Image (cartoon, rainbow, N blue to C red; front, top):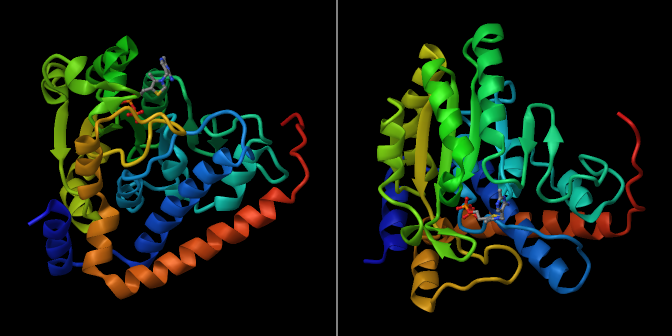
Length: 310
Ligand SMILES: Cc1ncc(C[n+]2csc(CCOP(=O)(O)OP(=O)(O)O)c2C)c(N)n1
């Protein structure tokens, strides 16, 4: 039995994901596929990193992390933003530098600021800032937390360890979400990481949980009590998602051998949900495709964003 079919069978047995979750997953998928197409057609500048295959991470977390919590995202952040705000139009306008852009078109794909959401393309940059925000929340808004997304390759940055040290020492409500897709750009994790993330985290006395699931309901059930505890007891927590990057690192730079790509595709949530709920999936997919299509047509025709001092 392939892993996608096994996951599909399990998904059918338990409380399934909601229609809203499914639509959101597919909106992110179709939006990013469209970004790659627009790049290929020469209609986008700069760069982009899609989260194809990893969309389920922020969608699963969205019911566990509220708008009053802070989210720090990274270079692969479109899914993090869309799962929180469902704002296809603002994000595409930002990436295309058009009117209505979330940050007036100066942030682009990787640097978005909106209320309590901030992304940065610089690996390891967000964690020390997230620690400072968590310290503030601990005293001023107990019960709120800071969620910071990083990749496995970012564990090569010293700032990660400085941040974990202070988060443990000061007992801060910091949730570090590690999207461990086994590769950093073109370097497999096994070629650059000694030991494990779990052992590194344990060295700081911080709780660590690893999940291999791509099932939204299962992930929420696993994480809910841990995140609750992090909030209530004001404690850091590292959650590691064993995930798979289905697309290239950036636009077309996929250096992985075919068997690694096939393995990633076999673990894709997309396959397991399409198999488990074919009718709901087809319906949500049609809707997602038409929403993305409408937004692309609309944003392409907008005038350039104009910078105004905030
Ligand atoms: C400080 C820094 N060094 C290098 C880069 C270039 N870079 C962008 S993404 C990336 C790989 C990141 O790997 P990982 O943290 O595993 O995240 P993934 O891309 O797999 O999601 C690199 C080296 C960067 N953005 N920041």
